[in-house]
Image (spheres, rainbow, N blue to C red):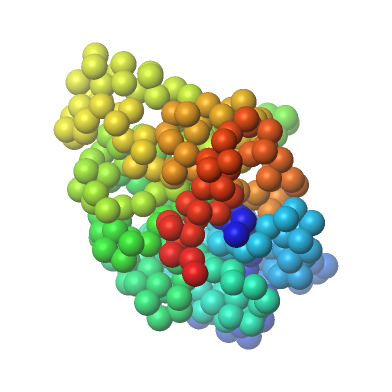
Length: 328
């Protein structure tokens, strides 16, 4: 079984509900061609790619790529962390119920990940529990930038505790960035900003002690872990030489590399080979990022070209995902 753990989908039923009851969610579907949302006071979203709300387009991609099943994540553009807690909770619940219903009716054995209102960690914990226990979702996807708060801050502990207790993996997927003028016109917000956000969040979870407080927690880093695997020596050097890196009593950062899981979305076979050698073949899972432009239209290729043994390829193609996400 070949499993893609990095795809994005929002059920259009959620949009239809919002059209009827926008005040309950703080979300509006804007008029015009395509689908654009207004989340609270945030800037309107870019027009959503049709595949983000059309399961048939995902199915066609899977068939062409040779993928058997997927773990569908939500869309961080519309997570709604800026909403008041009650509206944020209602919006997360709507997305989760609509996703679960859509996947139940879809062909195949696909599974989903919850959206949670991370602006209120206790409510996020409750929503994750509902999504896993009542809806059958397999974990959550969250933005590494929780309105500027580091994810390793103790205020998020109720959410991390729930994820650990439920054995529900949490996928960190970047979207929200602070404005950086030097990102300029060359798409650097995505090329540099997104891997940076993943790296910053992973470092916070390590050095802030979250991974020590919740030893059963599973966290997935997309885009091959951002910059973390490739600069882990710099983190170790800081831990050895700077007291700031030890202020929360975390151990040597490289010892935590295997506390994370990683997807294959590094675009180069030599980079993937290094990642597998560094963290172990049992910590890497196939990921395409469909349907986005920076995704991999042929995600199996980079694994096949990485000069890995057959057992390692099988683990990456699906065995690891089946274990992590409790797939049948």
